[in-house]
Length: 281
Image 1: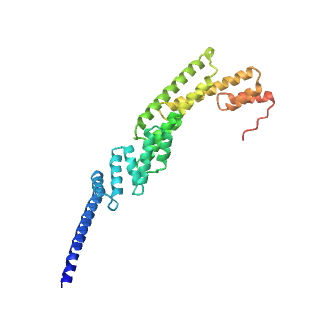
Image 2: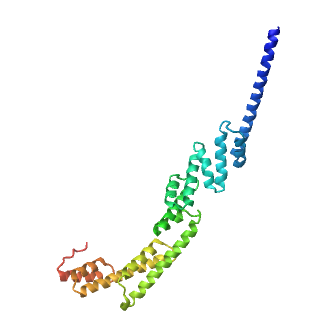
């Protein structure tokens, strides 16, 4: 009997310990579930604090890092959020959020081409498509590739200052095109002031008006530039004919077929040169 009594007293402390551990485990399970519920409800700040109090219990560290990253991400503190998503890359959308934070960091640092490449790799995640086109536009703007800018910024509408940049760029290009055209027209209408580079001026103005599309009266001005370029080439063909450069004049008038009487002038020169012009079917 004494032996049995001794064994009972030896077991009681072990049972008490087991009960305490079970109670602790149960308490942590409840706390963990409450933290998960907070996360599921979208209260990421409270969830982050709750998971943080649980230490390394189950997935608490990963949840805590991811939740903290989401809090900072919603505040647009992408630089601050990046290390938290780096810790939780294997969890939910951790990898994508880590990459998008890196892309935002590159954008903020002015590395637009690299940022565009990273945003582009994220597909339709968050607002990556808009950010991608915005960064493409900024990179193109830095390289004075205005045609690419005018294509990219509308696809980034509503993102950052894309709308303002597009409006400002359109205005600047239109203003510059008008300036070039007015100067070229003034020179063209004054034969004594005809500049050697007038053809290039009209061509540059035409390029600007063309990439502007329907902006203000760009299409009308583009059409006018085309006609003035044809007139300049027609005048050049006439000068070639006066100088006895009949072959060159013939080729110039032939290239202008459809403008004024260029086709007839080409036919006259062909007859003089003995060139056989095939009958039109």
